[in-house]
Image 1 (cartoon, rainbow, N blue to C red):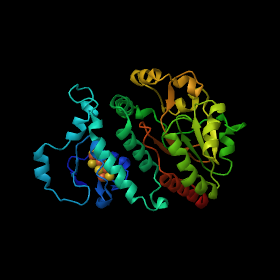
Image 2: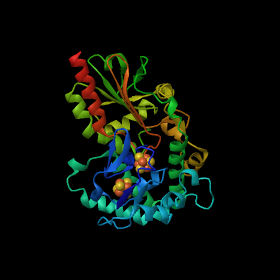
Image 3: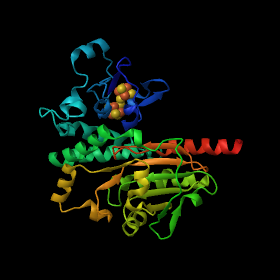
Image 4: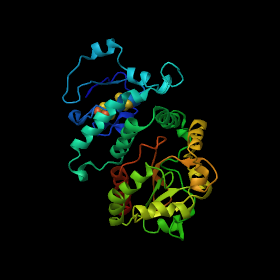
Length: 347
Ligand code: SF4
Ligand code: SF4
């Protein structure tokens, strides 16, 4: 169970807040996050994995807290051990530690099980990131080590090398665009904004397992709330419309699903990437070609992103995730929408 957050080491990056599948941490404006719900911890160790400052300590007792002495933990050399032994961050290039995350399989499985035991009322626990963490835990438990390593390495590389300075951000002005919709017709920005703000969510492609978790989640938790506020939602992938229809029909999505031809919009927003050679080789070995799957002829995909655009075409919110197993929850999007519409009403 999470026992310690060492504020002197913390860089306030809030990665632990974002990654925790149990919502254990709360952010603190201008400060280090706090452990707000310790007993909700699944002992999955993900926060330790993602804390590049080695400021967190998760104890091995998954059932109950076991208070620890901060000075003793710092002196123990345990801080950062799991990142190192798993070959993450600065250890990724060190052949002694590379790709050893599957040693954590049993631990992740236990966290997965605990999460399921607690998941009694799904309406209270319907978090896209919890579901994606479950997907990852399942892969840790079932994938061949070499396949798991390719997946983890690609995601970690994206997190480490993403050029965040190029990402679309609040205050940017979005140029008019028109995208083909999976059902036919066009999604036109000016029409989306006719009555107020609009929400865009970028996803990878119709066959992506994580996108098949994220889009139904948005159908349940975001689309009805946006529709009640009169706000359109558009899910966007570079996949050609003829293949995007599959995911729209599979999940009976009530919102627009549009094709970003040639990744033009994604590139304009600075959020596309091309899979590394290791990933391309691994897919090719299974007879899969992403360019054929998407119909684009390339391996370029967008990073998952949620973007709120005001009626004046000014971006009000942009959350881009280099790791495709982390996506924007519905709540922050709805809070921004309410703030934007509140401001518009008051003006
Ligand atoms: S991940 Fe580590 S450095 Fe970042 S906010 Fe959490 S404790 Fe602080
Ligand atoms: S160990 Fe897992 S569940 Fe516990 S605080 Fe860290 S990320 Fe959250």
